[in-house]
Image 1 (tube, rainbow, N blue to C red):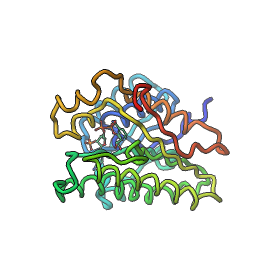
Image 2 (tube, rainbow, N blue to C red):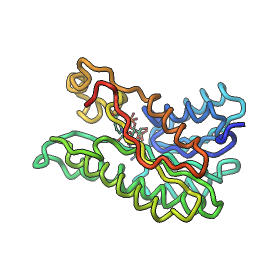
Image 3 (tube, rainbow, N blue to C red):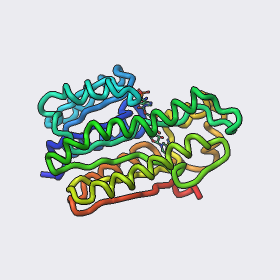
Length: 249
Ligand code: NDP
């Protein structure tokens, strides 16, 4: 039996891209899944796919906007057995809307990027980590970004948000050092997902231009690494991992 068999994995942003791919990869390990995002119809379809494909896997789909603390509390407090004891939290929900020059970026877009990538990640972590400490087992895996290591033109707020994810990961890791709860940050480079066009407000030409002449990662590439990270023995902590397409410098 694998380490993740029968364990509960809570994924934010599981309705598309990396989060959805994580659900498929964790299901292969026999983990039970709590799938959350705003688009419940997507989660329900994924739940159906996974429960049909894996008879040993139980899946709960819950609508959740990570910016909403009350919704998080309601979802976490009402988790039924066998989903109550969350072992792995994948803080994946996030992204960027409208990458603009700093002087042009709107307050609405600033709020979306900071509240989703940073505050949302903190709120969900606050809701689930106390249970992990109590049970003396668990793993928080944050999805950071190359944008959390560097900064680029028109990426000021998104880069700031992902730098914050790196800092939060490190602080939490230090705070939990005397517990068996591990903390990791997986930082992808270019991955072809809905994010590829969302970040340009749906402008497909701009999105395609980014990947011209190169092969970006696919969501499964990152999901496999997240599952590998979760699958390490408790004394092994993958702290911070940068994962690029080979053609990205
Ligand atoms: P997607 O756009 O495919 O996925 C983003 C996910 O986040 C969706 O499931 C979306 O679901 C969810 N989400 C967005 N806002 C909220 C919210 N307020 N509350 C709850 N869920 C939310 O893109 P990716 O899979 O690429 O993105 C996943 C993560 O990877 C993000 O954190 C992103 O920043 C990061 N990343 C992506 C890279 C890339 O090149 N694609 C590179 C580096 C990092 P819904 O809309 O249903 O709520």
